[in-house]
Image 1 (cartoon, rainbow, N blue to C red):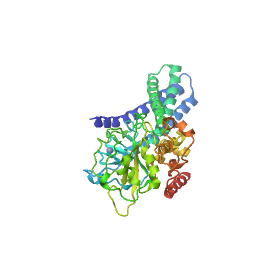
Image 2 (cartoon, rainbow, N blue to C red):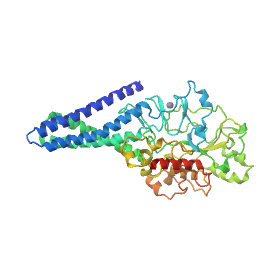
Image 3 (cartoon, rainbow, N blue to C red):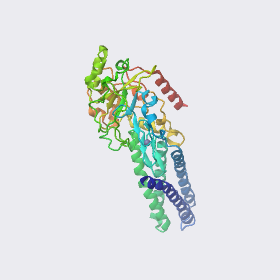
Image 4 (cartoon, rainbow, N blue to C red):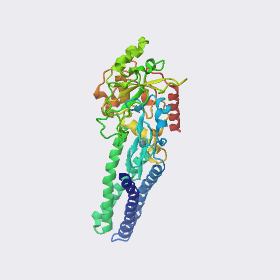
Length: 456
Ligand SMILES: [Zn+2]
């Protein structure tokens, strides 16, 4: 029912928008310029020609960004793939693209988050839209203005549209307001002023809110309960903590510390937590089982330190069922402190560039998709920022004297994070592992290619 209503709204709103813009354009050209300025009591030909030209000059980018937005949203706003009809085949083993990365959002068992509607695994920050009936990558909201989902593929065009629409509405309000004040005569100019003023209030609110969210690298959905929100992340254990053989199935249990009812995903559209179908967690799930590593006494201290951390919820080893010739990858399942945003890149400027691009024309023209659509990094689906680096340190997964988790240093304004002395270097933020981890040449190569592509 809600789906039908919002789809109907989505069809009607663009028509109403177009009608309003057409009407105000008519008033600016007809009643205002031709009737009042050029043929009116005081002949002002220059103003009568220049003012509507400025109007259409400002209308042009509004129309261009809006059409680009409509095109992206109607064709592919970044939907994830649908699973097969019953979803059982896909559900047995998440595809390697999840666990060949070093960090991904997971559920209590260390599996990627499952969408019961799409019957498939959800990449980090993907959310299911009930209106569209699909999961969308980095979904922001369902937008009746464009009749679809605004996600990572359309968010930069959406911001451009809002910005240009605000400019146009501000110009229209000022122009019509001035002549209403001067003449007080024409009813049509009064009506057009009312429409332009209403639009200005509306777009101004939207543009301020949207740029605020982008400056913190968060989305409308993620911003709901942003202070209390926690999530689970599967983080690859450093090489010295990786097991050398497949964990025996004897001790495969859910971590005692993991609450099955705990908050684990902001979307809350993943259905109830699933109970174990396959052995996914190893003996070291429970910190008291760290005897798993006693053979390797040199690393025991590190594991003990890590598993004592308040964020530790267990481990998971991929591939889930032993396979010949496949390297084992064991991840710590960590619960983030409330309000942490691992994707906040540390400063509003870095976050804005991550959405809008690094060149002026990327910001102004609705041509290229946002840089956040690049998922070529081996580290994570989206770049991780200083809050994640500090979190990793607090969780004891960095080879250096650990500091206690200080809420003030993690959950803080991005300005403070930026000025805080960086402890892990450029590490994770630029697609590389921090000090003490195997540095991945491939990740650096991808980064260089991205830089080179941006420079061209
Ligand atoms: Zn879905």
